[in-house]
Image (tube, rainbow, N blue to C red):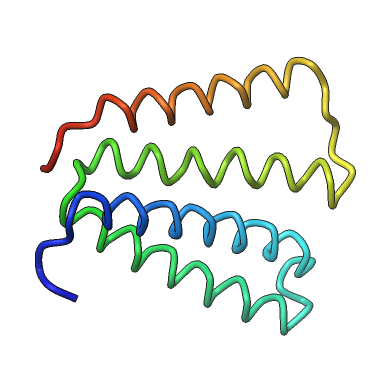
Length: 116
């Protein structure tokens, strides 16, 4: 991949990195403290790939924006899947806070400068 990633591609890389962050967070929980070896391997592979894609996206996107969007995608996705897969509480307060994170992600995405 070239040293300069186009702005559109940087956002796609960042989105993929965020999805992989969700995967590693959920697989970490499902691995039961890394006692389930296949899920532990998924966790480490997804984490590595997520960091790698984040790094590629940061070649173009501002560090603050990229990192905040990446962690936001991971937080929202992990919280949502935690409610669905692990029966974690889906209270009004939690859902409201998740909505605030989504609003922050959208704001940072829409207000991001063209390139770093």
